[in-house]
Length: 130
Image 1 (cartoon, rainbow, N blue to C red):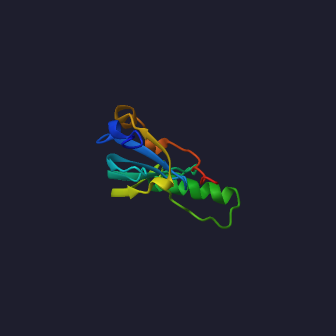
Image 2 (image 1 turned 30 degrees about the horizontal axis):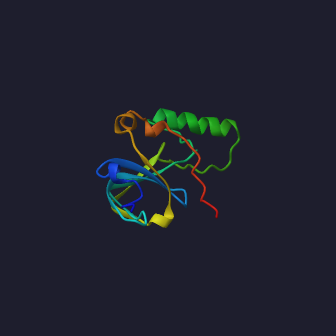
Image 3 (image 1 turned 135 degrees about the vertical axis):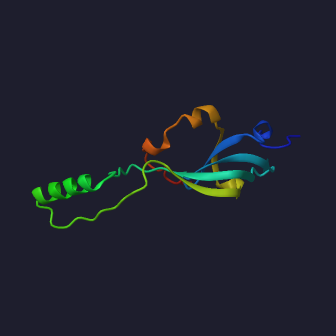
């Protein structure tokens, strides 16, 4: 008789979970049951975006930007300062129901530590449609 969904070797390891609604949640697998409900610790959600922000570090750069907008005859402009790259929303101890999980994978922590998430751009995943 099977004792679980084959996650035994991933307990206390960092994993990445893609949910049916397209979210990417990373955390340490602490436990699971026969329905693949999982418990993650030290978890966070990675929110991907294709938006690019402009970093203005000083008054001179801001003045230059305004001059360019005047030159282009832009009458109205909405400045939105976005957080660059992948946002990581802290979740902490987190439970995910098994019926909401699409993919579970082991995360290579060494490789992940070398990723520059501040410069990474990607389209958010779409929800799974049954």
